[in-house]
Image (cartoon, one colour):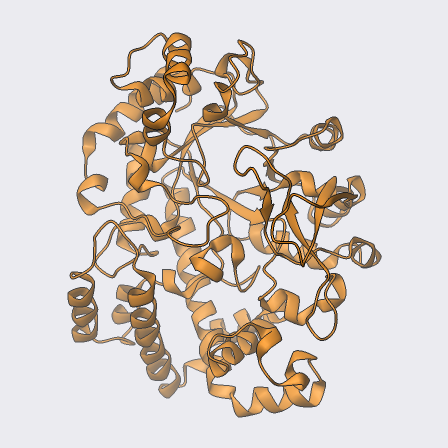
Length: 502
């Protein structure tokens, strides 16, 4: 896919404002699309939409296919008569006691799930499970939905413990008789999770239609690895390096890099690429096809893992000790192209990258990523992350969800780095973030993307994630007053038009 010269904004839907404790797919999302359209932004980039797992991370989801029920628009459910106005008012009153700029997951999530359960009960009582669109959805997505719905149900039964700790060896091993008994005994809960998925994707596709009406396309995100505690690993053990009892000897990670001196031990299961190859990469093809039905372009996180990946002994405390092993390489992309007709990816090619990774990226004509925050550490006047070096076939960012906000990064930088930034952009400290944004817009990069925090611009308190940390991440939210600030969007629109990206 050739990306036209254009620009976009990065913000996960959970960061949208609203009265119900966390951003969702409702009115604020449509208003955000209006803002993007008026500012000549042609892309909205999001993080993975899957159910957040450990630590609330969308990159540690409990399913690589399912949508996050927390994002379901509750007002839409009231419109259909599945929730009462008084119930929404009660939730608004609860959330009014919480910080507006923070998603307090431990309070908001159970409250929203309680309402989603009431919605299911009323829908079910009226025979909603016989509705044609629901039945069609379940049939179309049977290859992942049944396993996910049972997995999510059993997570509830076993108090959210990891599947390896359920205490039922038959269910851990997925013995057919045990699965059949669980489906029958927990039929209502399994249906409830199917219902939530039907709601999520119905609302998401409606929102995508609204985006298209405004000339806005969507960029999604696929982590290369899945969570160990996920329906994917539990139900597809044959394609992962996980033993039948759920134990494992090695996990995924990366060696020391810009983000961490000890590397990052992610703990994800590694793939059995040889087994996947024998199926023509069927599971991956299904995963990418699902994403292509949800968004218009896909950022593949940790692209280099398709060329080679870092294997870390599970017993190690850090990722310093490990080894590189060969990934699936070109045959994987050939299989995707053969079965899906194209490879609509942005390659996240950051970190320790080799020529072999660049060759794989370029052979498949995939745009790579450039992060301007990485450009000033060593004083190289032709650093590959300086805007004047960007090739047309790349996507340029001020930063990503893993970076500090650009204002926070600049404020905390050494005076030497700040001097380099001032010298390069020929600008003083005041309003520096906007000067950097303009520099990226004026570059040759086919696409520029700015975290929404940078166009305000906000400091470190608005940072979304600190890699290698387990808490305090993924909770930042934009306030209603911020979204309504017309000036920043007008300014972004003017700069975008001047750079011929409108």
